[in-house]
Image 1 (cartoon, rainbow, N blue to C red):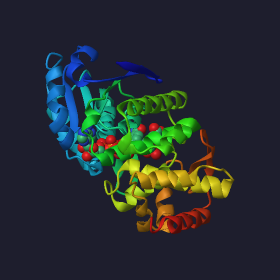
Image 2: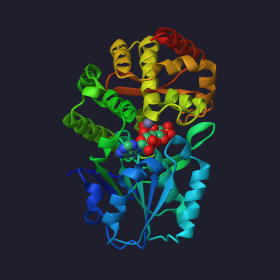
Image 3: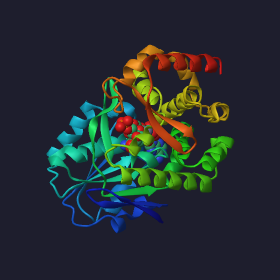
Image 4: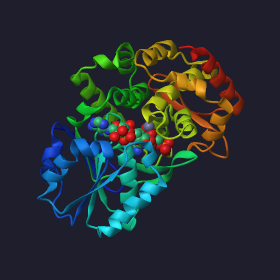
Length: 359
Ligand SMILES: NC(=O)c1ccc[n+]([C@@H]2O[C@H](COP(=O)([O-])OP(=O)(O)OC[C@H]3O[C@@H](n4cnc5c(N)ncnc54)[C@H](O)[C@@H]3O)[C@@H](O)[C@H]2O)c1
Ligand SMILES: O=C(O)C(=O)C[C@@H](O)[C@H](O)[C@H](O)COP(=O)(O)O
Ligand SMILES: [Zn+2]
């Protein structure tokens, strides 16, 4: 089992990474909780809920709450249902919530934990590749119909338990989605890693490569959030590709395109703006080929309207006084934040749409 420690202002916590951890939770979770509520989704329930419940049987009374799988569950309605369940079960300040699932569950259950009784302990048990990102760093949130993650808080888990066996059941589309955030971490931190990824094909990924990529992604994320927990500065870099991604997700309807796929498309615009407006020489063509080779839905660019995207981007958390800020790269591994004028955004989004139409 590998482990990474994350330092936060409230407490330090471990990210445990290993195989079969879900079957030995009694050994890694502190004893003494009054009760445990496992929050999961309808797909993950079928695969892993029983293992988790059985391995916690000695620890405390264990309850479960299941929401429908999919991004649309990261909503006010499901949040309210889960709070009702916490009240009904009489969870107290010594109770524990376990978020068993991908980033949707991590964000939703984490937000419940952060607000119920003004905050109780929770553990992230990520089951997707993408959740190597979402389970670390303490951002928890639900979506507003008009904008992604508009309602949330910063609230770190007491532990992250990443059972690598669980990602074996992921469908191809979720491997692709997860790699949207993996390649973001590579673009932010290491040109060599980025170039290696750009040469590859996700369907030919070895288990060793995948584990190595996830470990590196977790380290990149942990080292940034430790330095800037509340996103006053460098944490904004983790939003690389997200200004457009979140606008697309909200515009098309949550779940219409996966978060990681949207990020991957957002990274394409990031590269174009970095190169065309700011004189960088990022490998835009290689990246476009990687997206096509791995079946990322870049045709989604034909379904959006630049002016509407700009309006949505005004709800981005980096937007201040209605001015849209983007994370761009001077070169691979050298990010910065810059304001981009609306007319330039519209122009470059339109150019990009023309370039990819028909691909
Ligand atoms: N808090 C953060 O820092 C942060 C970072 C990145 C993303 N996010 C959020 O994470 C969410 C996306 O997370 P995601 O991509 O994990 O989506 P997800 O949680 O919706 O999971 C994707 C799909 O895979 C299924 N699934 C999950 N684990 C499985 C498994 N082991 N086997 C088979 N199927 C499985 C789910 O049921 C779902 O249908 C978005 O809401 C995004 O905004 C948050
Ligand atoms: O942890 C962060 O900070 C990130 O930006 C990571 C992103 O991958 C993630 O999607 C995050 O939820 C986006 O945050 P938001 O503040 O733009 O909602
Ligand atoms: Zn993200």
